[in-house]
Image (cartoon, rainbow, N blue to C red; front, top):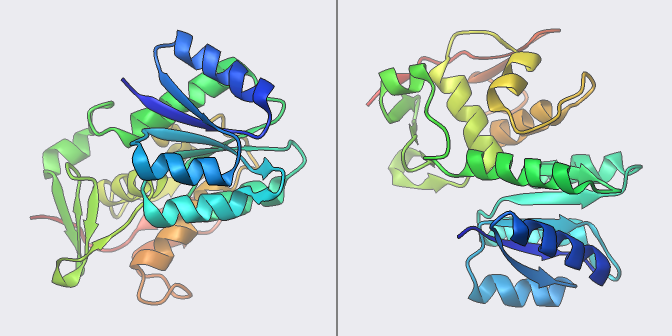
Length: 239
C-alpha cells in the first residue's frame, strides 16, 4: 500500500486530507511540524509527502531542502495562492508539484496519482523511443539507466535526480536532436494542469543543467530554442 505523509500544522487540514486519501486506498501518517516530520522519515518509508510550506515557526522551504538532501521522496508542496515566489523556490529545491490553497480534495488526489505514476517505473509504459533504444542511454560521460531510474557519471558515481528531473531527462534523451515545444513537453510529462505562463519546465531544465552541463551558462546538452522550447543536442547511444 502506498504510504503518504501529510505535513500541516492545522489539525483540521490534516484530518481532512487523511480521511479523503484513506478512502482512496492510501495509508496516511501525519506530522504537525518539522520535528515530527524528521522523526517519521527517519523511521518510516514513505512513497510521497504533501508539505504545507507555512508551518508556524518552521520554514517549509527549509524542510523541503532538508528532505531532498536526505531522500528522494516525491514532494507535493501546498502553498498560499498568492505565493508565486514560494512555488518557484520550492520547485528549484526539487519539489515535484505544488497545490495552491484553498486545496480541493479531487485536485489533491489527481496530483498525488500523477506524481506517483511518474515516480514508479511500472506505473506508465515507456515511450516507443525508450523501448526501441533500450534501458541504458549514454551521452558524453553520462549513462541514464531507465530501469534503475539513475543517472550515472564518469567513475560510476550516481547523480541524484528528482522524479521530475528524471522524467524530463528521459524524455529529452529518448527524443534527442528533436526540438520539443514547452507545450509538447508538458503534454508528454502529464500530471499537471499547465497554464500558458507556467515556468515549471524552465525551472526543471535549470536544475538539470546544474547537474549535467560542464558550463551552465553555455549549455551543450540541453539547448534552448528561442520562443519554442528545448532540444537535447548531444548524441545519445544505447549501451
